[in-house]
Image 1: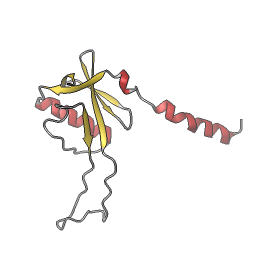
Image 2: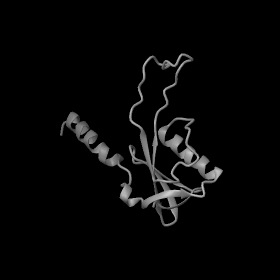
Image 3: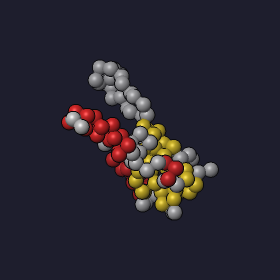
Image 4: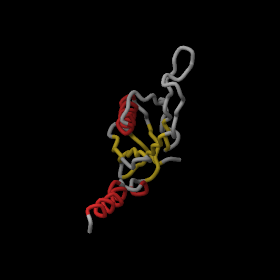
Length: 127
């Protein structure tokens, strides 16, 4: 096989290798119960880590009523209300889902497939 074909074959296989655990294998949809300051801080840290940015502003009741969290990009503006970068590019909201499995709370970033166990968070199956 020629080097160019090997490279193309390798590139074609990368998406399959990059896939994380499918959501259905993470457990059942869950919500946070008893959202303590420590639990909210851990959730915020996990979202910031997944998005590679900070700070992220989350509502105090994030993931307490439903198992899906959507995070939208904030467009920074000047005093006159104009976008600082000269244009408004919001992009798609980033979606996270909370699961429970064997007493653990697992936060999954839908786009990347990455997931993290939240140790300070207590959760229960979503209603």
